[in-house]
Amino acid sequence: MGNPLFATKSMDRLLSEAGETGEHSLKRTLGPFQLTALGVGAIIGAGIFVLSGLGAHYAGPGLMLSFVISGLGCAFAGLCYAEFAAMIPLAGSAYTYAYATLGELFAWIIGWDLTLEYAMGASTVSSGWSNHFIELLNIFHIKMPLWLAYDHWTGLRTAENIVARQMAHTADPSLVPGTQAYLAKVGGILAAHSPELAQRAHDLLAAPSIFGVEIGFNLPAFVIALVITAILVIGIRESARFNATIVVIKVSVVLFVIALGAKYINGVNWGSDWHSFAPYGFSGIGAGAAYIFFAYIGFDAVSTTAQEAKNPQRDLPIGIIASLIICTVLYISVAAVLTGMMPWQEVNIEAPIAHAFMDRGLTTASHIITLGALAGLTSVMLVMLLGQTRVLYSMANDGLLPKKFFAEIHPKWRTPWKNTMLVGLLAAIVGSVTPIDDIGKMVNIGTLLAFVIVCVAVMVLRSTNPGQARPFRTPWVPLVPILGIAFN
Image 1 (tube, helix red, strand yellow):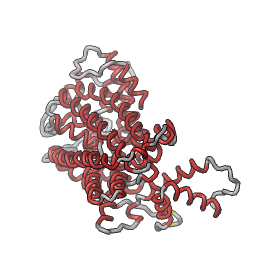
Image 2: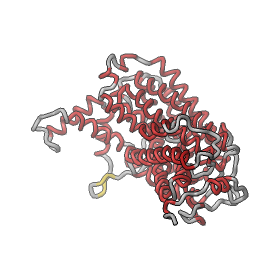
Image 3: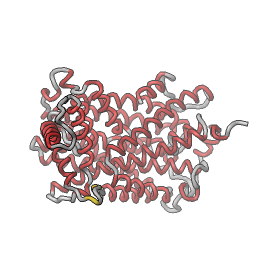
Image 4: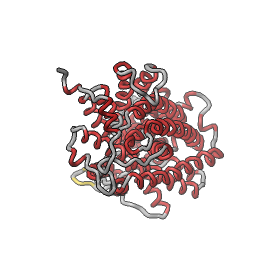
């Protein structure tokens, strides 16, 4: 008798579950456009509107290559997701695929791993949303107390990294941490590198504290996460319509950025040689790719809506692949514009694109971009929270979580309302008290493991069940899955 920890779910059972209908099942309302919009809605957001600024401080103009590297890794994994999504149209995504190929233990692990991707991803984006909301308030000359904004932490972390790199080349014994000489040196480094970073570091020192610990609660991040949660509870059709509207606004703003920003590109900012193009070399480009990898997270969330798609076998691969292609082209274009408009050292961290246009005197354009960023990040949060709740719903249906709570469908709205409310509250709390780069690292860990598992699962199922009908087939197996693993 085999070990139940490694027992897999049969394809017949999975397909039977996928075909269930009725008032206790999810409602099928999504077509290819809505699925692609969900993918684009999840992908375009944090990478361009938040993390591109941080990535530029590591990769310089080489940020364009950072986006290419991250995009390639996600494309290989995306092809593997497309095969599974069409073959096993269930809401569990990587969790369900692991259950079908690697067994219950791996499914349990990957189910919780997806929490790092989706729930923590929503927390990351809520923090980024707050930065742009604060920028919007500044337009109307409304100032929030720092301890209710909490956006200074990201600037502080970046400042610390810059100082550490510069200090590594200093052999002055008089520079002892805490001394006036040391502080003067640090201030000089930050001021020379980026006056804004110096101001952010100063702002932290001015924040209120209790027992020597700075107070920080990101109120806008907390509130927006709860608002999105309420929309998701009301229904998938309403959520999809809201998302589609937001995506149209977001893509329009991105195209506006590319078209207008291209007129202000100065080739000198890209550098005349490799060192100026990639100031920290391949390691900097790699670090930039690691930070902006989160920019591509989202295409996999399309697979979590499998039980709400009208024709999942055909439409899920379309949604996954189309959203990746659209976003990769837009990302590289925006990175070229951002690093071409200004020296990479001057790129703002919290709202890089809006600030780039503001520095060129394009105030109205900057305001439009800020509004577009808010809209874009809103849709990312929606899809991330949607994905998390559907994974928990699948785990509960498999008996790995209390079914009464996590899989209960609201009789009117046909959504897993209890688990949606719980996930939304937890995401709101984490996003309001945790530095954005710390959450981003957790998200990357969760996503990388999920991508690797799905790539492995494709190869395993091709070996154990080669005759299974596959409406979409990943090309060049095992090369594509292996490249997906290597890149991630």
